[in-house]
Length: 234
Image 1 (cartoon, rainbow, N blue to C red):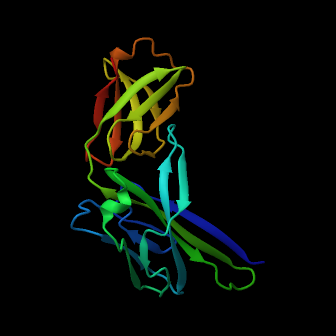
Image 2: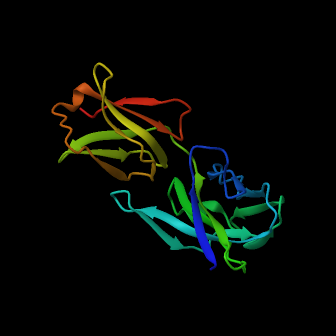
C-alpha cells in the first residue's frame, strides 16, 4: 500500500529549520526598507537525501481578525521565481520573492504588510508498500518598518488578553505570568503571531488573578534575544 504523509513546518525563532531531509533558510522573511528594497530570497537545501523532490510555491495575503484569528487570501501582488522547481538530492534552490512595482503602493498606507509564503512538496509516484513524507513550509513575509515591543495585558472573564499596540507584528512564545515574588502562576508554550493592533486571549483555567497590578508577564518574542518582562495594565 502506498502512503503519503505531509509534514507541515511553520516558522519558529530559528534562522533555519529542517525536516524530512530538507532545510529552509530563513524562516522569517523581511523587506524592511521598501524605498530601496523590493525583493528577498529563500533557500531550500536537500541534506542526506537520495531522491529528488518537486516543490510548488504560493503566496497568500495574511491578515487577522481582531481576536488574532488568521485569514489567508490568494494574492498575486508577489512575484515568485521560480514557482515550481525540482530540488535535486543534496542540492540547493534559491527562490526570489518580491514586487515588480513600488512597495509603498502595495502597503496602501500601512506601516507593515504581511504575507504567507507556502512551499509545498508535490507528490511523486512511490513504490508499493512504501511511505512518502511530503514537506510543507509555511513562512511569513513582513514588509515595512518594524517597531519595538508594545504589548498591553488585561484579564477579562478569566482570560488573559494580549493586545499588540505596535504598527508591526510580534511573535510570542513561552508566555508566563509571575507574581511579585517572581513565582510562576501561569504558563503556556503556545507560539503565535499578533499582527499590528490585534489581540489574542489565553484561558487561565482555574487561576484567579484578583489584582493584576501585582503580577508581571514574561515572554519571548522575535523582537528580542532575551526574555521580556512587562507589567499588567493599570
